[in-house]
Length: 440
Image 1 (cartoon, rainbow, N blue to C red):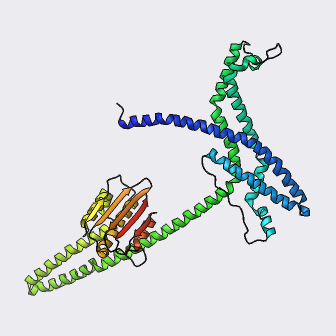
Image 2 (image 1 turned 30 degrees about the vertical axis):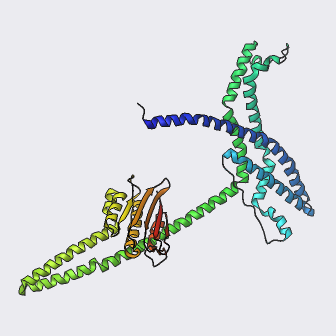
Image 3 (image 1 turned 60 degrees about the horizontal axis):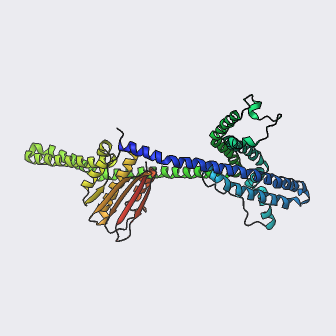
């Protein structure tokens, strides 16, 4: 028996079928009007751009040709703008207007001659001159297929009106078929079915042929420029993440060194002194020696507790073994301020993401306990399609900052190193809301 999900999926597919059919018919209409309109536009373009261009080139030696060349380029630019608007529906997205070279501080003559030094302006001219080639090819295929589909499917309604003298032979007779009217109807009907069945693919291919030619000349340079800009931006982000990772690692190492120096190292020094004193007391005062050893054992337990706490700060075992929800539950239980935790169970994430989310909450709770004077804390960890959203808010005194010297300064580097962003909203007297968005 099909499940409820299967039935829902089947119903959704059945309901979307008319929409898909409507989309196909709409695309055929868009592609057809694009090609049919492109053919006269191509004739207009070659009739205007090519003669003016060669006239400008031929007369440029006597300077009269320069204004003609400028007029040609601006005409080609106008036709290119129209074409960019036309190819948008073919690719089902808006085509970005490219960058044209400008010289705001130039003289009037310099501004007039600017298109001569602009690569995109020359590409517009090339498109205006040669666009009739793909336009003509596309036009021929589209008109042929539409004529074949409509004519073949409807031939039986009007074919009887065609002259049929002794010297008049139509296509079925030329191919050796029976000359009876029924045979002709069946032949043309089959032909119409063929053209109608392949109409979408032929019209689509014809429109894309013309559209890709226009896109390559009118948008190719701009697309390449955008790709280079995006690559540079991605490289800068990667460099920032690398710097943030190095900074976060250095901060964590300095904090670990300070914690070891201030905690376990001092206790181990005292432990060594107590054991040395006990060794000297065993010969003269055994009771005092036993008391010293007992105190040393207490120091050992406290040292072990501090080392466990430090190890949790490096790589909490509960996070590795049981996941983020269990680790945050344990973290909330150790906090000295009541914590309202909202962290639903979901599948395991990348270890780096889980570790970053854990340390965001851990560092935030530490700062709340030390500086906020808050009476309650809300911790929320939610997974969205784009990433993991971690939010920690309290009702304390506010005033928290990501600036250097504040408790949250190193946390921003850790989040940035994971590819995320960190935001702190902490008005004085209004509590603090810390939000981290991490990619997954």
